[in-house]
Length: 276
Ligand code: IPD
Ligand code: CA
Image (cartoon, rainbow, N blue to C red):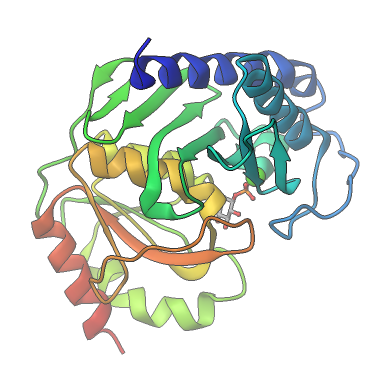
């Protein structure tokens, strides 16, 4: 079996096992969930996060993959005899707060690379666990939604565009002034609360761009979504319009503007840079 088919099969199997394992926790939605300590990414770990991570690790081991896990929850761990053969970067549940509140927008994100660097990711999966929709990509082979090839949007008008903005957290005082022009020019601003899936929305043309310049998002959340977006024809750069590569590490954070096409990207960049 070719590497492409093999990884697709393994990643889909991971997603299926995650979906089964999180089912019992759906019954406890809305109830307080015990904290199981602080995860490698710096947030409190909940039982559902660890159950999803375990599901991924077990599935990879069952498929005889030797790998280094880079997880938002357990951090960096080695599995198998040749653990530096593959690096598997995961956010087992992106949108944990949504999950625990019963807000139907959360996903699982898995990225695979030969080196622990963002640009080395060659395949990835983001699974919308609410609607059972799977976004996948393999370097050079395009991006797919439930197996159907995806393309980004052709919208170039900021006014008509639907743009995701992440303003969460204590960086909003710095970030908000930079985004004020963009907010005032765009009629449809959104934030759903699971950034890996929001990147796939841009990949699929559901939204036209997603902006997260807080320098807070972890590589574990973004690694698969970036590949999926790029393979669908989208663009990801810094707010200064520079391409960037970073180490895949649960503590490594990034800032980015992700767009469906070059024209809208240019407009977003210029609006962010012309703000006070
Ligand atoms: C969070 C979501 C959220 C973003 C946070 C992330 P998590 O991921 O992607 O939209 O604002 O910065 O940490 O913690 O639910 O995996
Ligand atoms: Ca998470």
